[in-house]
Length: 199
Image 1 (cartoon, helix red, strand yellow):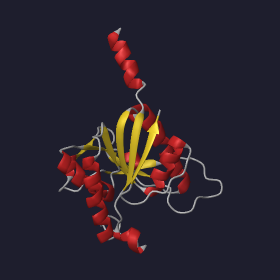
Image 2 (cartoon, one colour):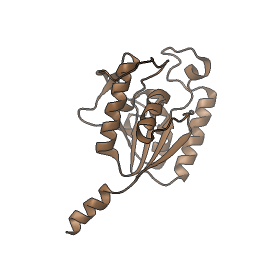
Image 3 (cartoon, one colour):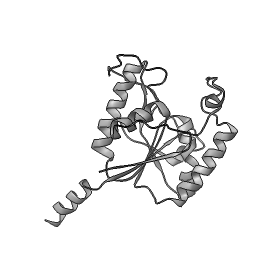
Image 4 (cartoon, helix red, strand yellow):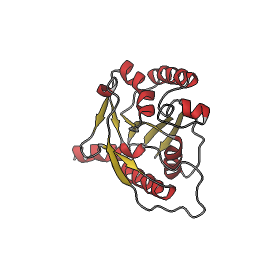
């Protein structure tokens, strides 16, 4: 009886979700997107990562930390993980999608998975890649990006609800994900926490 009651209490536990968009990159700051700018922090971005690290270290600990496989997201949370002696799980479905202008009749279609996830070597020890979740999603257009969002919503609800959860991701996908969870749109600034409670 007590085991069953404990399970019910866990299932009924609300979720305190903290979402953080990665630090500002040179691409964000300049509008020039290339392999040289996409995952390199601007001076403002690095300062944002440093300030975020201090705030997270002073905040209550997280039950689970999930991060996009992109290097800019991994490097945003890596200093906190190192200082807090924690590891984060790389969640492929947090990868960026749904960027650019939304078509008038956007609707979920399909997305696929592409290259293997390889965290940068200098921070690889801070991250866990789960079996069967080792490839980056490929959403080639807005519609397939919506399908990725739908998949992330379903997986979040089935696997990650309950307790205090930190997600580190992107503006396009993150905005869609939070909208799916709450019904509201939020502006996601680099390295700024968005906190929501899910009953």
